[in-house]
Length: 455
Picture 1: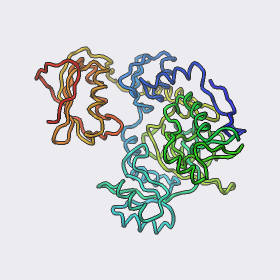
Picture 2: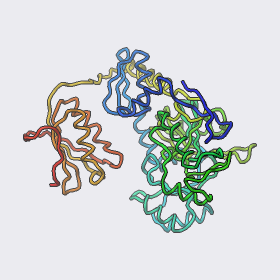
Picture 3: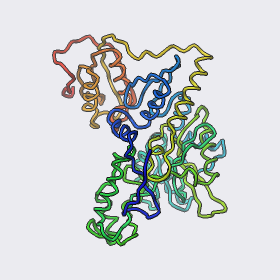
């Protein structure tokens, strides 16, 4: 699937994967229409004879031998309650407590002063998190000063409180657990380059980004040439046109964030067993979960007694990084995921009579929709216009003075229903709390889908 190369901007002993094969070409081209994880699973399903129908970039229905499996990202027939629990950090902590799973000390805090008192009690750096949320939104790490903790609390606060945890020391990994087995472990290192005595920092970053552009997972996560990198270079006495010495490591960023250029590497065979067991226990601790991604801090400073701390259980983990690591062996998660989901659904269908999901209903309809939540000022109307145009749906959208977004959707019922499904999520910056739908008979004269003025 891959070949490897040693480039001057990398460690001499670190062979880096280059994804120039036909399958990787397909994966890169699939990016515009589908999310990488579900696309990988859908390809496996099709290769094993399933008929696949896509409803959005992340949702598809696979039908094989009259058994229907509906995937949303990499989640299929997981228990909805268990998946919901995993998005609520306090509930997750409590389930992990019941299972005696190792994790940082924590407390639910309801004021900035309370956060400062708990931090003083812990006696070290802390992490502040919103109690509900995903993808690391609102999470602040390594906080020590009163100003840092207070600012982070204000950004994360809600009516149900804020989670404050101790900052544990070690390396963070993403463990992918299926049943009672860890299938893959992905490590991350902050963005950096290694000098060769000839290329400038800017040229080294360009060379590394050329390689990332070939990676189906990292192609949209190139190392940014921004002010943060400039500041970090200045602290090392460097600038963009500096030429680092041969073998000199240049730190570009400090956070191991893939979207900010972090390297990824397969660590499945190198992490200690105690960490793998902790990951398996964490997934088993939440009833109904069968697979999930588990973020764990692994401390190997004491070789004879390594430690592992559960940071988060994620029921919608991206599997693309495991399939396409920068270094190390690619791990196929799509095949075991599809087969596990299919076998579970087949067993369920054998026991119970399940009504089939109809992929297409060629009936016309016209609906009025009201969307509540953080939906104004986040590009929601432009996003809806693009989505409607892609599905050949007519109508209009506007901001309402009551803070909602209102729209009329006219078209084939199947396509309108598909767009309604997308409305529950909206663009990335939005946060939809409710979608209300009613029939709408009033006609409009324009064609296509337009944005109206606020009313």
